[in-house]
Length: 432
Picture 1 (cartoon, rainbow, N blue to C red):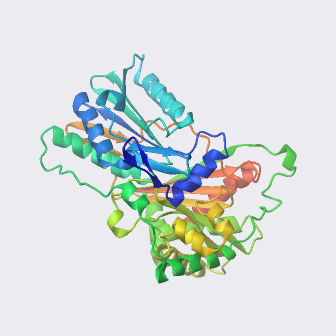
Picture 2: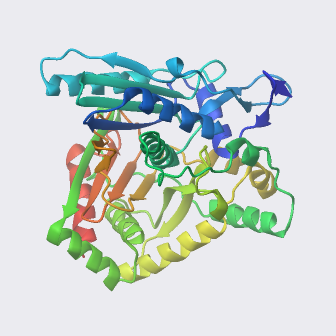
Picture 3: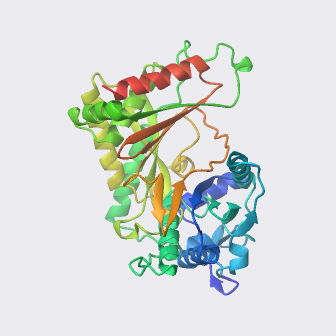
């Protein structure tokens, strides 16, 4: 089947799960955002041309998605739009940089709050705003139906590499990557590996416990009077406290990633009488040759955590489960069909329930960088988003000199005081 002269292919499993959610919901849909504060003499035409180069180089940024016809939900690639349609440029008159920043954050919030119609529009919204010739803001919003979290590293890296090259830096060599639709079009041939993956997840899902309530001391006393919405807490480890945490992880034979999982699970066990919990993790299903493949290939997959007597026991169990997950991470639509577990297709992708954990290890300190005479500050204009969770969610961002922890709690399931105690418990357990 073709659209506008382009061949259409089915959605990947992660895309299909999001497409189903969007079909049954009135929410705008999941998004990914990035932003830069750019200080210095930005060459605007070169910057916009660099954006066009990135969009042209990744078909996932040009996807159209449709659920019509006998093919079922499917997608195809559009041509790259002309420069005038790529980036919305605007000069902003503001009385101060603070007011400029508030205005930019407001636009970022507006962009993440608007619905997507990928039948007719591209899966990105890009804005370049000028406060002065020496200060610009760039904000980008992407539909998660088209791309996953890899967009932050791949899009940003390719963008600034292309910009440096346009300014004459011949060492900023382009790094062409594989195309997403080629991967989406591949059908997994039945075989021993596919059957092994299906068997593994069939047994893993059979172990998922029921979603248990928190202890009465932690939960709102009267459900119909419980507060609604999400409570946000968090903390940062740096300096001596960061060294203490990393030494505690090493002493227990754990990576930082596993040690944080252990702290989260241990803290949750202190607030529930459950013998086991399901911990949902975003898992990148790319193969080793697809590291620069931009697209939606991340699934939320569960590991089942049993209450352990000692931290080393829990660390060993989590480590073994994580290696098993990585070994069987290539979950596809064909795998789901082969698993013969109807619930697997509904649950894979990570339901908004229970306990969720996401961890990003940054290769180096990238909160600020220098590009072609510019000072670029990453994440300077975050949108105001109300992320809905049904239980507990922890996000950890790790840099060489700090680890930032953000926790989200469903107010209808935990009191505010219990949520803050659980946050303090995670911090205490991390420090050993």
